[in-house]
Amino acid sequence: MGLIEDFIARYRKEYDFYDQAARLVAQVLEGRLQGAGIRSMVTSRAKAVSRLEAKVSKRNLAKNYVSMDDIYNDIVDLAGVRVALYFPGERGQVDSMIKSLFFFAEPQKEFPSAPSPTYPKRFSGYWATHYRVQLRESSLNDAQKRYKDARIEIQVASVLMHAWAEVEHDLVYKPLQGKLSEDEYAILDELNGLVIAGEIALERLQKAGEARVATGGRAFSNHYDLAAHLLNAAGPILKGPVTDTALGRVDLLFDLLNKLSLSKPDLLRPYVTTLHSDTERRPLAEQIIDQLLAEDDSRYKIYEEVRLNRPVPGDYGPALQEAMDPDVHEAIGFFLAHWIAFERTVRVKAQAISGERYPAMPTSRILEKLGLLSDDTLKEIERIRRIRNNVVHGVEIPHIFDLREAALRIQAIADHINHESPNMN
Image 1 (cartoon, rainbow, N blue to C red):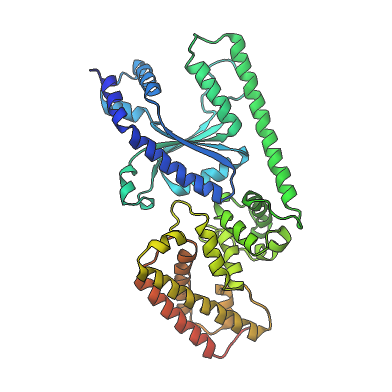
Image 2: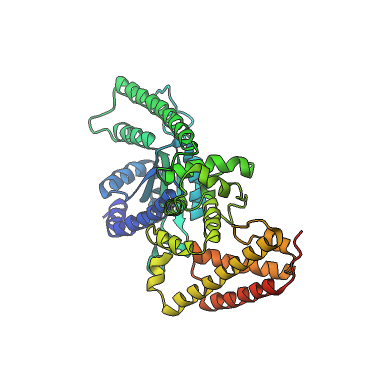
C-alpha cells in the first residue's frame, strides 16, 4: 500500500475526530454570534473521504509527499466551519470574535489574495476570510481535551459569496465533463458581479433596518434589532465605533427587556447614556443588565430564568447550578443575597445624602463620592464585584471559600457605610 492509500486509511479512522472538533468550534461560534445579534448560518464538516483522496492525489503531483506528516501539514481543512453572514459588512466584527475565542494556528488569509485569477475575469472573485484555529484548552471539559490540538479552518463570507464559491469551485476545479468553455467562464464571472452587487444591496438593507429600529416608539422585534440599535446608539456616547464583540449577550438583554416591558429605544435610552467604554472588561449588554438589576433586586430572579432559557457553550448558567454540589449552590445564593443588600445600602445612602435618585449599580464613582471608604476598600469592592459578575453572567463558578469570604466582607463594608457619616460633594 502506498503513502496516499495509507493516509486515506488512517483518515477514515480519524474522520469522527475531525467531525467532532469542527462541531465544537461551530457550537461555540454560533452561540456567540447569535448572542451578539449577528445574523448568520454556521455549518461544520469533516472533509469527505472521496474528496480528500482526489485532492491529495492531485497535490502529490506537485508536492511529492515523502511522509504522512507532509500530507497533514499540507492539507489544512480536514475539519472545517463555514460562517455565512447575512450582512457582509459584519466580517470585521466576526473577525474580532474569532480572535477572542480561539488560538490561531497560523495567520488568517484574506481573499482575493491571488496575484492573478485562474481565468479571465472582470470582477474580483471570491471575497472571504479564512482562519486556521485551535480550540483553547481552557474552554474544554475533560472529555473534550483530546480535541485541543485539532486544526480547524473557519471560512467567513456572505451567504451570497459562499453560494457562488461552491458553484465556481465544483465547476472550475472539479469539472466532471472536461474543461469549461470560454462562455461558461464568462457566465461565472457575470454571476460573480451579481453577487458583489447583491452584497452592496445587503449592506443597504442593513442600514435601512437600523434606521427603522431607531424609531423611538417602535418595540424591538428581536435581539438582532436590539444589537443594531446599540451599535448605533452607543457610538456617539462612547466617542468611537462599537464592535459586536463589545455588545456581549444581547439575546439575554432582549429577553430581560421584554420581561420588564422596556423593549423600546426610547425606554432603553436612559440606560444607554450611562455606558462606559471599557467594553473588554464589561460588554454593553452586561452594563445595561446590571443597571436593570440594581433598580429592583427582584429582577435577579427574572434574569436567572432568562439565562436558563438561552444556554450557550461556555456559560455554566442556572441549569448547571441546579445540578451542581448543593454546597456550591448555597454559597452562590449566600453571596448574591449579601451583594444585593450592599447595592441597596449604597443606593439608599447616596440618595439620602444628595437627594438624587441613584438607580444604577454602586459604581466606583458613586462609592468615591460617598467619601466613606479608603482606597484599599474601594479596590477590594472591585475584586468582589468581579466575583459578582462571574456569578450573575455565567462566566465561571467561583470557589465556595471565595464566595463565602466575599459575602462576609461585603456585608462588613455595607455595615460600615450604614454607620459612617457621609461626605458627599
